[in-house]
Each structure stands twice: as C-alpha cells, then as structure tokens.
Amino acid sequence: MINDLTRKCILNRKDYIPGKPVEEVKRELGLTDVLKMASNENPLGVSPLALEAMILELQNNSNLYPESLCTELVEKLASNHGINPGQIFIDNGLDGVITMIGLTFINPQDEVIFGELTFPAYENITSKMDGVCITVPMTEDNCLDLDGFVQAITPRTKMMFVCNPNNPSGTINTREEVERLLASVPPNVLVILDEAYYNFVDQLDFPQSISYMKDYPNLMILRTFSKVMGLAGLRIGYAIASSEIIKVMLKAREPFPVNRIAQAGALASLQDKEFVTKTVTLNWAGRKQYYKAFNEMGLRYYESQTNFVYVELGKSADDVFQEMLRDGVIVRPLTAQGRPFALRISIGTPEQNERTIAVLKKAMCK
Ligand SMILES: Cc1ncc(COP(=O)(O)O)c(C=O)c1O
View 1 (cartoon, rainbow, N blue to C red):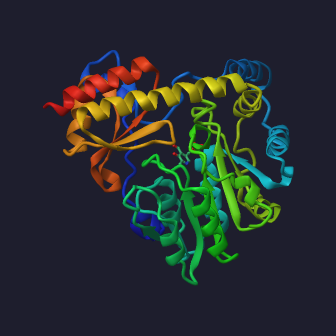
View 2 (cartoon, helix red, strand yellow):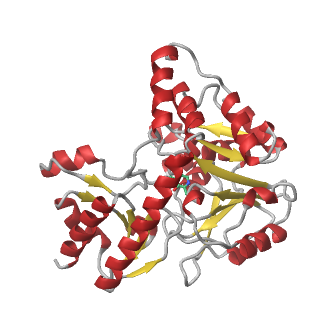
C-alpha cells in the first residue's frame, strides 16, 4: 500500500547514510575523546562578532518570526558583491538553496549534468524531482571535465552543477575552463557554480565568477556561511543570479526558511574580516602539514583548494576508516562515491591534524 502511495522516484532512492556523529562513536566504542574530521567544518568555531549578535537575537527576539526575505543581509551582500539586492536568494544552507533550484526548475525527465565525483546534493535533488542524472567522468587530474560537460548537453538538458572548488577532490577549474564553458553552453541551460569553498582558494587562475553575471543570465553562483564563517550549525547559504531567476525561485521558497539567529550571525560575520583571515591562514598551513605527512607515507594526494584533503591509500578506505574510528578519529571514506581506496579528511588545527595523521599512520600499518 505504501508503495502505491509513494512517488516512484522517492521509492527508488537508496536510504541516506549520514556521516558518523561524534556522540554515536562515543557511545558505540566507549570513547570519551572523539575528533570529527569528516564534514569540513571550521576548527576555530564561529566569529566572536557573530556569536555576540546571535546571543542578543536569541535573548531578545526568539518569539518573533524572522524576516522572510532576510532584507538586511541581502542588502549587505549585494553591496559587498556590487550587484542588485534582487539578484540574491538566501535559504536554509546551500542544501536548502539547491532544493529550491530543483523545485523551481527540474521537470520529470529533464537532464541535469554534474561530475562523476562531486557533491552528492546534485544527484539527490535531481532524482527526487524525477529528473535524469548525467554524470561526466573526472579528468586524469581528478578535476571536473568541463569540456565533457558541454559534450553531454542534449535538447533535454536543464542545468549543470559545477562544484568549484570540487568536493571531495579539492581541485578547481580554472578561469579559462569556466569561461570556455560559459561561452559554449546554450542560454536555456542553467550553469550553477557551487563555490562553497571559494574563500580557501589560493590558485591565481581561479575565476572571478561574479564578473560573468552581466554577460550570462543563465549563470548562478552559490556561496555559504557554513565553511569559512563557521555557521554550519545555523544553516544559511545563498545564490547569486539574474533577478528573473531569483523572482521565480522566491515563488518556490518556504515563507521563513532562515531563522533569526542565523540571519543575525551571518550579518555580523560579514564584519569580521579578521576571523576569515585567521581561518584561511590556519587552513593553508594545515594543507602543508598533510602534504608533508602524505609524502613521507608515500601516499598519492591532489593539492587542495579547500578546507579538506583527498588522499589515495592503495588499500580499502572503509577498513582504514574503521581502524581510525577505534582511535577516536572520524574521517570520510569515499567508497559510496565510487572511490573505495580514497579518504577525504577535513583540515583542522595543527594539533587536530597531528592527531589525525598519527592515527592514519597507525591504521595504515594494520
Ligand atoms: C560543495 C558544497 N556545496 C554545498 C554544501 C552545503 O552547504 P550548506 O552547509 O550551506 O548547506 C556543501 C557542504 O559541505 C558542499 O561541500
């Protein structure tokens, strides 16, 4: 009976298996000191300015519904990016934004293009909307093959998701590659650049994507407060696009998707340049710490432009993951994403990285 009631595209989905929470690992393994290096969170916590603003908002206004359109935050972001407020759409994390993109645009059987090794939310929303996932193999350097994206376009293509930098490979597509893509995609196909990790990029040929907005009305850019701003637990992210796109997406949106505390925290975090600099500096040092260890261990990795590293172990990542869990360190095996020998490890403080490396070394010897 339930099978008849349920939409087929939901019924056909595999159950979602979330990453192991710290509490579960403590309970199951009887550990007290567990370190999670699996979800690319900010190891410095949250900006002190944001924290102060959030506490005030919690104390003073929790009984009131939030402002639906996040007007103050929209205006601040628009002025920072040099665009119109009508070009910004804020939702409950980028997860919420991606869901709204699907709800607004994907009809059954529409094709959606993305990389074979990329952020799972694109597959997730496409299949929930009964669209068709078209995945493009990675290049030899573990990058998204944007020329391959163009070749995959058909009359049924609705949109493509370009995760740049890409999760979980940590690699980027260059300015030249992105410009070639934009010039080749027909105007009726949406190009969505997911730039959740753009603050961590130090490669000079990374595209300044907002400057493309004026030439490409089919372009959307996604940014989040979860990573460099440390607000992952508050759930707030945004899309930048033409006002035509934003107007229709607002029709699909829930009335109050972003709570007051998140809005206050996000607005205040934009003032805290020092926190951003500290976070990025720590991250760049952490990358080097991992590269050094991987080089010593003879492991293959790809230089990261994000706050995590992708490393190939030459043996079962699930086994190494389980072994590391026993020592209280949670990392992300990429088996479910078709890379059974690779791990994704978040970059933390020097001490957290050191512990992770020591535990990885020990697990690799088993
Ligand atoms: C590439 C990418 N896009 C989007 C998200 C979702 O971000 P948010 O926390 O804003 O929902 C993530 C989260 O890890 C991500 O890696």
